[in-house]
Amino acid sequence: MNYLFYLIIFFILYIIIKKKYLFRFKNLLYPFIFIVLIILIVLYPKNSIDAALRGIDVWFFTVLPSLLPFFIISEITIQLGFVNFIGTLISPLMRPLFNIPGEGAFVFAMSITSGYPVGAKLISKLRLENKISQIEAQRLASFASTSGPLFIIGAVSIGMFNNERLGFLLILSHYLGSITLGLIFRFFKYNVKGHQISIDYKKNLKHSYNNLLKDKNIGNIMSDAMQDAMNTILIIGGFIIFYSVVIESLNSLNIVYYIMKSLENIGVFIEENIIKGFLFGIIEITNGAKILSQSIESNSLHIYVLVSILIGWSGISIHSQALSFFSKIDINNKIYIFSKLMHGLLAGAFTLILYNPIMTKSISVFNYSYKIKNSSNYFRNFFDHIYISFKIILFILFLLTISSLISSILYNIYKAILKGPK
Image (tube, rainbow, N blue to C red; front, side):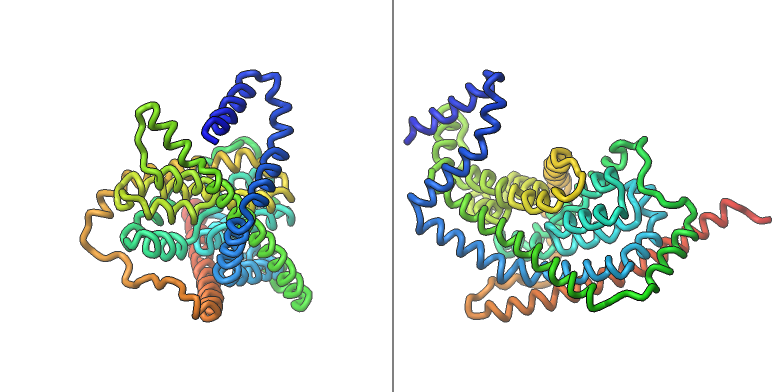
């Protein structure tokens, strides 16, 4: 088995060096991966079934109740014209900062509170309805696809690392990395004019307000929202189950062991859980973060940096979910993947910078404890997730309304100052 591993590595390197075979290799890559995966499922059926069941458990009892309310209400608010109205109000703030329309504020707010892949879903929806241009969708996708605070604080920092201050460090690093990325990508194709119906702020505001008051068939809107939300949540469930099986299949190949031995042969000694956690985290962040938390050096800075990078990167599983939405629009997938890599690196850099100011303080950051899910309370947890999700989204809508009104007032004051006294 050891020789087979090195033979595969040698074959891949040979193909890369011999560029004339590279194109053929690319065409055969995906069929080869799926054939190997099928063989591993046949050879290790029990492991694959157990992994699939774990994926179903995570999807049904955690992901579905957490994300379904966000999908339903966000779809309803878009169809009613509320998002367009809020977007018009807050556009004076979003345009100079991120060079995107005001609707981007709604997408970003939903993303940072609900987590993956709500941002990608909403960006696709706005682009399909031609509310944002292709360039604006690309800019928005670079920073409005983030993890949620419940995952970072509850699942990772407290549930896995048992360290509440780590949650504040990871959240701050993650969102600072996202905002920094948004400020960088505002210059992406800067000379290309964005989606702008009119430069007249009052005219746009009146148009969106009138559209908000138009008679709409609420029955059809709710029916379409439910159907669209359920289709989306089923797609996400499929990806979660699939990548759970993929990780278990890689684990059965003992790939981590061979990588560790290869590094040892050249004098590099790294703990197995660190290699395993980071490798699996590149594919799926929950499994990766869990394994890293079980390493001997779990409370060290470099482990925190690796976890921060993985959360910013978000994992191939999340990328697959996001790209399933982006496949419907004209976004450049390679640029999106590159932006997620940059997000991971920026988040890791901010973790390095903020580690001493945050982690060396003796104060308590969060005044609650994370309760590990008990199998006897599955359905109670299910409805608790739904209740919390609805409360969060209603708070977001309220906060966006207030902030957009403040933005509109400040814009009018700014315009009045520029005009000066008559």
